[in-house]
Amino acid sequence: MVEEQNIEVPEKFQKLVSEIEKMPVVELAELVKVLEAKFGVSAAAPVASASASAEASADKEEKTAFNVELKEVGAQKIEVIKVVRDITAKGLKESKDLVEAAAAGTAQLIKEGIKKEEADEIAKKFSAAGAKVEIK
Image 1 (cartoon, rainbow, N blue to C red):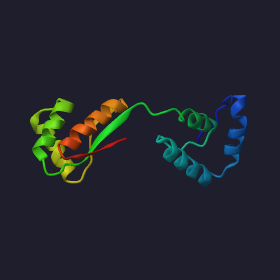
Image 2 (image 1 turned 90 degrees about the horizontal axis):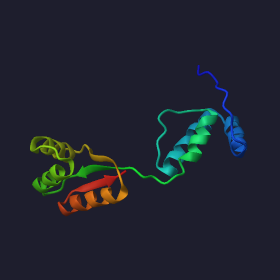
Image 3 (image 1 turned 30 degrees about the horizontal axis):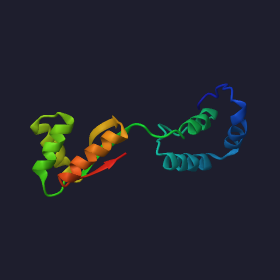
């Protein structure tokens, strides 16, 4: 069982925290899923404490770090390998293996923790090569 910690809740959050404390665990789990979908975040583990509501409020900030995943390779596999090599600075074999894994249906992480502008530029390069990427 998790020990209950004595956490001082700021006055502006007391009403929200008291409402969350009254909720059954099933509803809390549903609330976490809704917040994850609404704000594009992920809870590391289900948390049913006062700190969870404070973190949920803080997660309303705009996302600043993005990941680019290669979803589909398309017909121009060699061009996609060249783009992967250019973006990741990986060798030919590593780039080829990454592209082949994506071609087999397993999405491959190309770059993570980058700014939106850089992610958009990478997506354009892959589109020009005939591949499909997803920015998360």
